[in-house]
Amino acid sequence: MSTFGTLFRVTTYGESHCASVGVIVDGCPPGLQLSAPDVQTQLSRRRPGQSNLTTPRDEKDLVHIQSGIEQGVTLGTPIAILVRNEDQRPKDYSETDLYPRPSHADYTYLIKYGVKASSGGGRSSARETIGRVAAGAIAEHYLKLAYGVEIVAFVSSVGKIHLPSVIPPTRTQDEDDSDDSAAPLSPDFISLLKGITREEVDKHPTRCPHGPTADRITQRIIRAKEAQDSIGGTVTCVIRNMPSGLGEPVFDKFEAKLAHAMLSIPATKAFEVGSGFRGTEVPGSKHNDAFVLKDGKLGTDTNWSGGIQGGITNGEDVYFRIGFKSPATISQAQTTSQYDGTPGTLAARGRHDPCVVPRAVPIVEAMAALVVMDQVLIQNARRGAANLLPAITTLPPTMVLPSHHA
Image 1 (cartoon, rainbow, N blue to C red):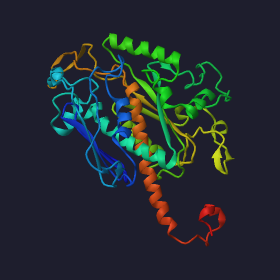
Image 2: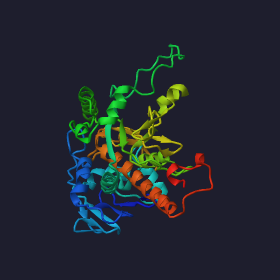
Image 3: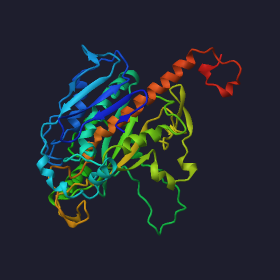
Image 4: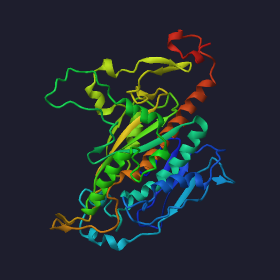
């Protein structure tokens, strides 16, 4: 479906080559000071044509707020945002009248709906994510003002080139696996998560915050582009100053909602939270996060859990990583078949990213903001209802949060 969220509901619309794309946001609290520039910043980070590493499609992606805001203040009513498509070239897709692009959604959309958009990938195009980013900017603006939440994503790998701090050295097959001294994640990586800013991320077109690695990633993307090919990568995201108590066990655990959000982004193929798959190689004695007192309240000494335990946020930083496949549309000739099964060769035209991860960064941030915002509203509704009740006096202290006990 095209709607995401329970109380903060986001519905995106539009196809790659239609007149406009956009979003309707329902459930935004009234009284939030908000203007077009608050949304435009993130859309400008997402827009195509930012460097020679991205698609040359020239879209300005200018925000047009249609409703829900007057004199710079949200009314609590649905907010509609429109962004016009201005640089469509449908003729570049004439080959796809005959051929479904390998690993693209052309064929699956056709078999699902019985019809498909004639060009540009329709709803499966990354143009659809404009609405997500606009809605995410609204959610993030509220979260920053209300809770001080900070959401920063960055490129952590492209192809086989990784940030040196992301993946600790691993053993070879022949090494003794009884040595459990290594931490699940490197100290450098944990330090990076605590201090990384968007300004640092945006210093390089790759959005990789490590200069030498960014230079290598640049060359890898250019090599794919020159070969009329593509390459995938990963984006890591951290959410700081997280409210605790978010997440709805058992089916709507916080990490489950994050995974849902991230894997709905085009071209995603993998998701891990906290120590992720690396945590499976470490015994519990090394992986467990011991509790300590922090600023007068309980926190954890380490954070291999990624700020989530039992599907509920514990107040520590939430961090996760998403894998993006190599873009499906490439100009290199590929042996494939037409819709009727006739063998042939497809050399796709059009303007496409040789690697999507630099432009995926604000999309990941937006979807993270949407998850947090929705869960904040749900938890606040629960707490508000509970606070209307008398203090609990019939249960032992071990069963009740101190603030809820008489």
